Length: 211
Image 1 (cartoon, rainbow, N blue to C red):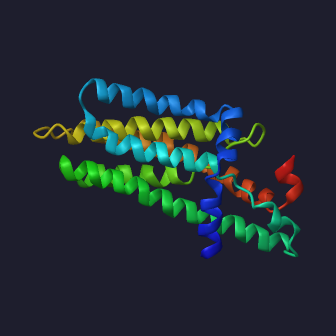
Image 2: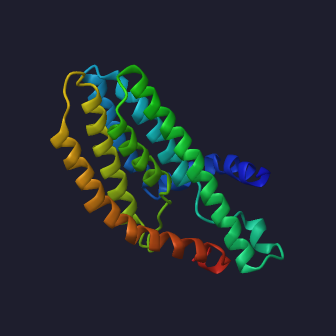
Image 3: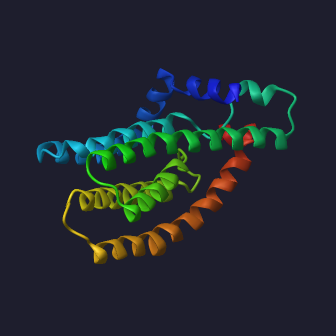
């Protein structure tokens, strides 16, 4: 556990921020900024309780590549042992990201109202968001990550808007949102899961990481 925490903290280096800036991945933050500007302009400051944690998680995803620090590749480890290290690190980040996103979700429900359907929905979306990996130019992840991030942010924002309508019980809207989740999100997640497994396996091989 100590090496997982140490490596995670090590990832928050200025060099990693410069790297994702050079690769244009910080441009995706503009999508979140548009929502922040919108909710601020309309006086809906409550939604910052959602967008700020999402922004933190988004940054965390892209400054922590799915690979090991160089010293792990020169250590006498087998590919299976390296793959386990990569997988453990990935799972650790998922749990941490889930915690951050759930805190934001609970915050909004504390100051608005609690709804079981909304809580289940945003928790599933938090899990999907937490599993996202930083994508490269040729690894096949980019389309999955971008589409899932956009869908999760838009549908969660819709759910939180429902929460703020105190006397309104939107059965039709909830059914539509759950239909989007089952038909669209889950379908995309099937393909994304295949890419994640392939990415974790390739991250255990140094030549695959540097190419």
